[in-house]
Length: 472
Image 1 (cartoon, rainbow, N blue to C red):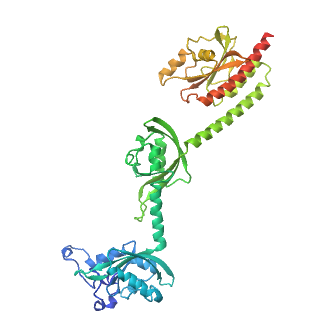
Image 2: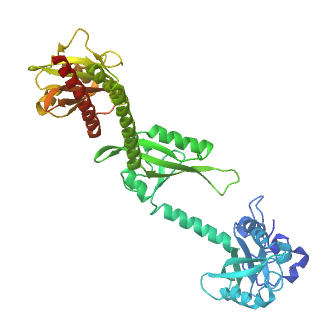
Image 3: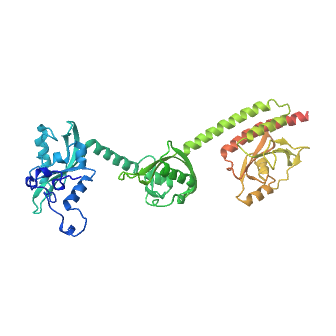
């Protein structure tokens, strides 16, 4: 493994042939340092130096003051193909590692580092042992002897494309972790953020440094289990083949908000070990909530339009107008509500005319034996809808209060959200249509009210026809 004369790789040159001008610690046989002499089993200093040089990732060679190669490590052998035995002892690169036409210029530029302060960076075209040329980037610096005088030059070099690849990788990582247009979070094996870029900090609702080291459960109220499961899977099995869409609820200063993140994951492993050692996971994501909500709304609109179309075709085949009304409601209920009630105006009160079963899902049916009075108290949502000639939305609280709330309003026990739409036809109020949802569903929103009003208009037409027919 030796890479210098002192390591034994060029013993055939003989100790007397050394130029004597190499850098300190690079002479023919400097012997072990005095402080190492008493440590049993400690290798001589020269052997330790040779081992360190050969273990470097960068190609390295050294020249004495006369320009003779004194050191040549394994990485230099890999890049150019010349072994340490073939390289050490040669004067400069002329005729073997560089073209003769370029030799003087290369030698002058390398050796100029001996008298210049700091390091110098150059690019040279060197020759491989097989005759091929390779462009390398060098960093060279002078070496001083014990007397402080210039004693030689050491030169570290690498292939330009490898250096450029490294620089690109560094530039890419810095760009991702600074101003990328998507979130980047690096988490350790304990699933705690270690690096957060600006986009991710805004998405998570905190500062870039304030988020570091905190458990994800402190940031994500709902959906953290799915996120942590994905991160554990990446650590154990590797990155998934396709992005995943995760719905999460975040805790922010403005309250909780629901977001959808399209996420990709990368397992991070140390490049410095033979066996991959996991360092954590790289999590990249974009907030696609607006797009997903728009898709859901479009799907919902298409489904409801299809249901109304099917309902109209079915109702047109019904001889009894009230049967047509209940058929319309059966189609409207699908995916929209759990229960529906039809209360018609009879003088100064409302009477229950049709409804779905209170105790189980089922179709909307006319009340057997005729309509019965609806015992609604003052301020009931159905009465308010009739008074306003408009739509009323309301919801109960959580837990046991929801059952009490439903019972007080004469609704099924599982009702937690209600929407009352007035039935109007030919300028007259005919009654009210009440849609009910259970607690495990979301409350009615504005788009739901618009749909309910469309259904109510069609039901009102059927009810009006039934009343006209009955009157004649």
